[in-house]
Length: 146
Image (cartoon, rainbow, N blue to C red; front, side, top):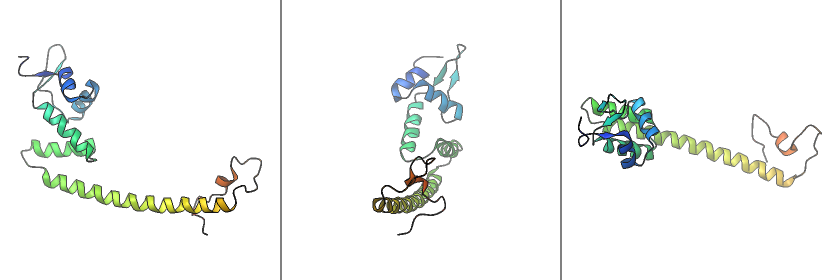
């Protein structure tokens, strides 16, 4: 095996800015395939591995999970272009974000209701076992109504 045709994992780590442990993890998940393992146990990667790591990093910045990235790479490894899968995954992410935004907006409104109620009664009567009567008065089932 020639050093000029393969990279050791440490060299790949330096080129990509990732830790060796991260690259090993990617390999263990099947996201990054070493070309060969040496007799010494070293993982050797092709020079294309750098581009694959950059792809993984870019996909992560778009919110794709490592499992989703693996799906994308599997489609590519079958010789197909994974762009329709990427678009489908992205559409799902956008839908999930819309749901989360709606949930967070409702939660923010609920917190604002508590804040308004607490401004009107900042020091409610407390029982000895209560840590904070404001929180103790919160219903576990619904927001306060003003």
